[in-house]
View 1 (cartoon, helix red, strand yellow):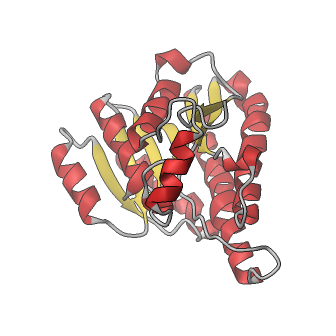
View 2 (tube, rainbow, N blue to C red):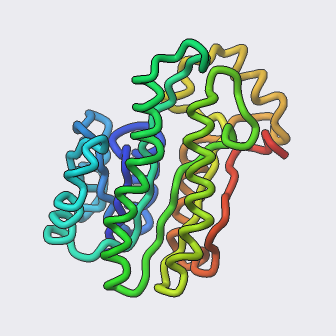
View 3 (cartoon, helix red, strand yellow):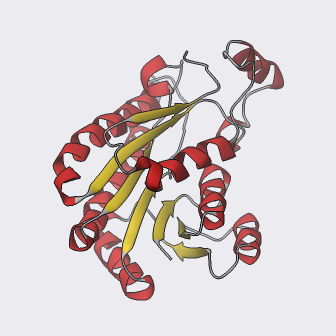
Length: 241
């Protein structure tokens, strides 16, 4: 069973990815600060340890080497890493506290880069691996009061493209998935009117679901994605078409 680390795997999109990967025969290791009731239910539903929980604070950069080492010791080689965890703090840049800006950059940019740095060392030893970074359509379209969030997601796109060239010779693929507005905790703040407005301007006249994004991640991790690297796969029901 191939091990795939999924950060932010205790709820929302991350949990949907874990569930999809478990169905596809992977062992999804959900990384989060705490175990949620939703994650507990998913772990019980998944057969043969298809979903496991690994508690960790992704803001603790210094503890990452030991964390990754412990995962390898407990579960074996790491085949895939899905850098899904992120925060979507809104705020106009002119009035956003510097502490919030620093937190967004630390969790959305520095943390996934630092974690990837540790994981690729394991992948080098195995001679293969798959990395999927979670970007967003906001990185290319922009959105009012999300300028810092957009900057962090745009950074993941650049990180993806450059790292793909760095590690390709080692048999490691690096791609990004850019979801549009989907039904998760990060979009619950939108009114029903706003959600309908977004759906109307999408080519397919609907919002994408979390499972749509999860299936895109599964594809990139599977045989179909073996010759795809350095790309950004957009899943937004045609919102940016």
